[in-house]
Length: 250
Image 1 (tube, rainbow, N blue to C red):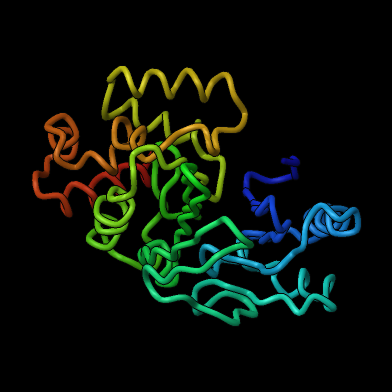
Image 2 (spheres, rainbow, N blue to C red):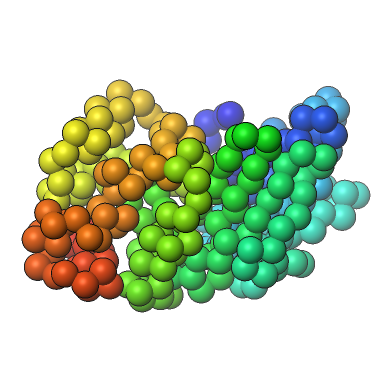
C-alpha cells in the first residue's frame, strides 16, 4: 500500500508462490511506475499484466504510459473493450489465473460504463472483488452509460450473488460522502457503524464485504420498506433510479 495524491485506488495483486503480479487501474503513472519498478528490480514481483475495471481516464488513462515504462515485459492490457491500449476483454464469467494460486473471474457489470468489469479473485479461502466505479463502500457509481435496471442487475444480481465474505475493493475512496447520503435514508445500526468507521479511518477499501454492503448500502436494499418509503417507489428499478437521482442532487 502506498498513498498517492488523489482518491483513486490502484491495486497491485501478487501471487506469492510465483511472484506473478497484475496492476489494476494504474491511472497515475508518475506515482505508480516508480513503485512497480522498485518491486520488479528487487525481485518482489514478476509483473504480468495491466488490468482495468472500465475505460474512464482516471482508471485506464495511464495504460499506455505504464506500457512504455515496461516495454521489455510486453504486458497485455486486460479490461473492457473501450479501455486504453486494451489487448484482451474476457467474456462475462470467463476465468483465468494469476500465477499458481489466484483464480480470477470477470464479472461484466455495465451501467457506469458499458465496458465495466468487476474482477473476482480467489486464493484458497480468501475472496476479494475489485469493483471499480460500479460498487463503492456504501454507494454505487453514476449511471453515465447505463440505466437503473442495469445497475440493479450489476449490484443485486451479479455482485450480490458472490459469497458474503467477499471483501470489496472499490475504485475510489468515497465512503464519507456515501455515508452522508445513507443517513438521509436509513438510520440503522449497520449504517451507524459504517459512519463511525469512515469518520475514524481515511481508507476503507478491503475493510468491508459483500455481506456488509447488503446491510447498509441502500442501493442493495431496494426491497427495504424504509428505502422504498424514502423514494416513493416500490419496484426495484424505480427505487434504484430515484435513489441515484436523490444522491446526485445532494
